[in-house]
Image (cartoon, rainbow, N blue to C red):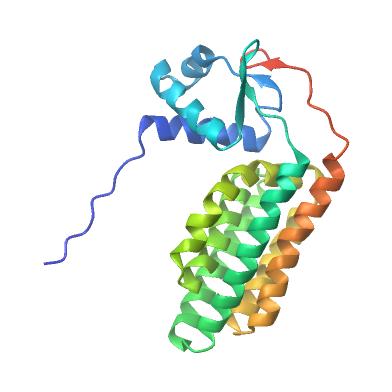
Length: 237
C-alpha cells in the first residue's frame, strides 16, 4: 500500500532563518547592520530561542558574522569569496546542463514536461521582474537551476550546490540591484532551457557556464574596491 508522506510545516527556527535571510538578500538588512536578537525576536513575534538557533544557521551560511565587541551583524560582502562560490557553481551548472541535455536527447517523454515546467518558471520570473520583487526573482532563479539538476537525474548536483546557493542568494540580490538587468538574466535562462530541451549538450553546457561566470565577473568588478558600510542597528534604520 502506497502512503503519501505527510507535509511537514517549517519549524519556527527555519521560518526565522528564511525571514532574516530574505531581508539580507533584498537589501533591507544591509552589510554591517547590527543584529540585536531581542529586537529581531520582537519584530518577528517570536521568542529569542528560535532567533538564536537561526543566527547559528545564518552564520554557517556566511550571511551573519560575530564580533566580540559588536555582537552579531550582517556579514560584509567579500568579492573574492563570491567569485570562489561562483567558480564552483558554474562548474556544477555547466555539467548539470550538459547531462540534462544528454538525457532529453534520448528521453522524448521528458522533453515536453521539462519544457512546460521551465516555461512556467520563466513566466513567473518575468512577472517577478515587473513587480520589482527581488526575493521572488532569486527564488525562481534557484528553481530554474534546480529543474536542470532534476532533469540531469543526479541528486548530488543539488546537494553539492546548496552551500553555494545559500551564500550566492545575497550576491544575486546585489547583481539585480546594481550590476545587471534582470531581463538579461532571464533571457539567458531561456536560452539554456532551449538548448537543454533540444538535447544540445555542448551549447547547454557553454550557456550555463557563461551565465554563472558573467554574473561573477560583473559583480566582482563592481565590488572589488568596496568597503563595509557604517554599522547600523536593526530597528534604528
